Image (cartoon, rainbow, N blue to C red; front, side):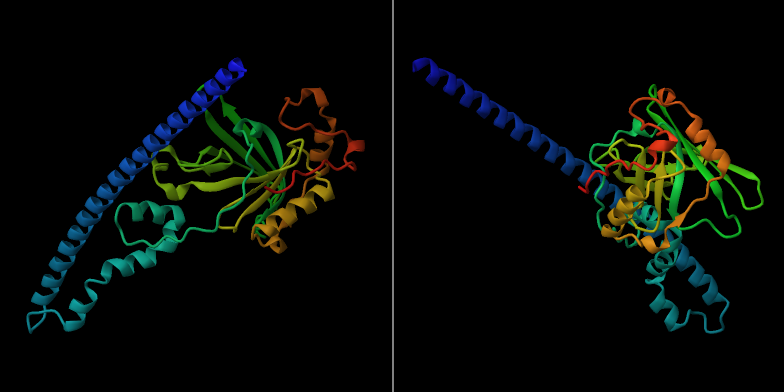
Length: 315
């Protein structure tokens, strides 16, 4: 009995120590967040004040120059009334051009850009970026390809470099006139992301990648059990992709993805299928199963397409 009491006492002591360590770690994390938030706020105030002072000085010089050219020697009353509203009006006009990310970046610098964050999406929790490696076929997308392009045979080939943890993607498509197009993208996990499912892609040159507006969101929303099909969308709900390891996706899986997307606020009525030619179908089914890298989703043989894999339920 004494031994059991001592064991119970040891367990209580270890639990107390673990609780104290957790509280210390939490307090340190909160202090670090407050410290970073304070530095960002000071930087935003400083940059905003500097920009406001420079723009105000330039506007004042412009007003004086215009006033000298007038007979009465001073600017009209409406010019003084609209002067303080010049910067907010300019920011409102430029907000749609810079996008949500660009507006957030400029707002952090203290500029009067209003940022409306979209409703949060339910993402795939247990996602690993390395699962993207290899060849994927675009099965459907929002918005549809422009009629003048009429893109078909769209494939996405992802590369993951273990040495520098860099992500690259090559998109290939066939235009309506029969010519081939290819675009190379650089990818990364979004800064401040809560999960690796929050990816960003850009085709901009390196010297322009500092600007957040060139990075587009590609968030992994769902996947089939065998990871052979993915549902990817944007937080604004204006873009959506269904990708598969094969150009033909089972209708049960496709319907499950549509239901998942509709429940998250996407307009699935705008979803358009991507056509793939017979060459892509033959090449896909000709690949032996053992050549596909493990963990990336297996390519089923032709007779297995009618047997739908189970789709993991929503989070």
